[in-house]
Amino acid sequence: MMYRYAVLLVALVASGSLTEALQTRACTNQRPQPASVEITGCAQMPCELIRGSDVAMRLEWEAPFAAQTLQHRVVATALGITAPYELPPDRANACNWLDGSACPISQGEDIVSTLSMPVLPIYPLVSLVIEVSILDEQARTQTCFAIDARVVVA
Image (tube, rainbow, N blue to C red; front, side, top):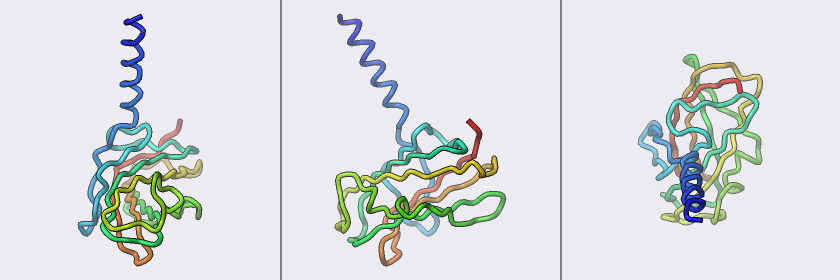
């Protein structure tokens, strides 16, 4: 019986390590970084983004400003070209993806948010830098992080 509990404990610890906090890079202009970023299936950079799938992210951050609304903003740089990464409108609205909070948010509030980012089947197999930020209605950055990634096939 004790052996079963030991095996269960090891299995739980091992499964928890699949969503371990990721060391990310700071965004430009000293914008505030999240306290923690988890990307499913990525324990270290570069993160592999599988074409035709969604990349699930979980952020923990402290709101530097009170805000009425929040928007995800994603910018990708590949092959020397930087361009906005357009999210579907329901995913771009970060208020839809708060866990345990709701908009409006208060300054100093601890926030947990998620983002599911589609990796379309038409994307080329390239290495890139992705910058993810959450902006409020005044275009102030609530939090921001950058990762190195590469698009791969399954």
